[in-house]
Length: 164
Image 1 (cartoon, one colour):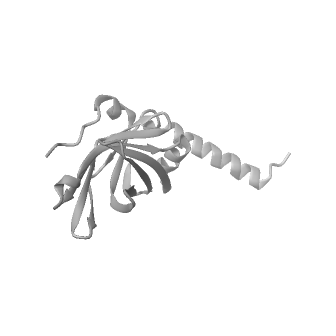
Image 2 (cartoon, rainbow, N blue to C red):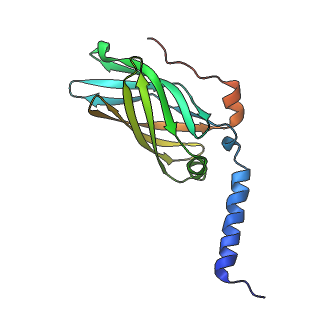
Image 3 (cartoon, rainbow, N blue to C red):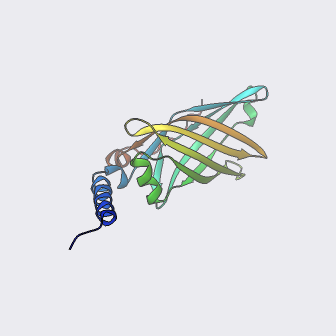
């Protein structure tokens, strides 16, 4: 019995993805590091620093610190959660761009809406664009990320942002 070309292509594609997915250690308990990011505001700038994002079910959690210059008193710290289902994490690991959503709350428990896009580059990293809605103002940060394997995630607990 001859197999149709479509069925053969489908079987080959599924087996290729399954073998690639089996070789991805980062799906066990990954950690994401995001480099410090900066954006401009009307007469100043905001620097966003996060701890490592650690996986918790189908999301990644971290702490953040936002420093506002020259108005230091507008700065804040808080917690941020990015929703990232396993399917999206797999797509990212396979080199496909993904969109994500999340939420944050600052040290005064004020909610922040988070959306963004991750575009893989070379290796385990790539570019990231994060949009944060804070008090009716959309802040857009561009930066880079690294997706690290599970072994490193176990050895390195989250690093809180520095108080400097």
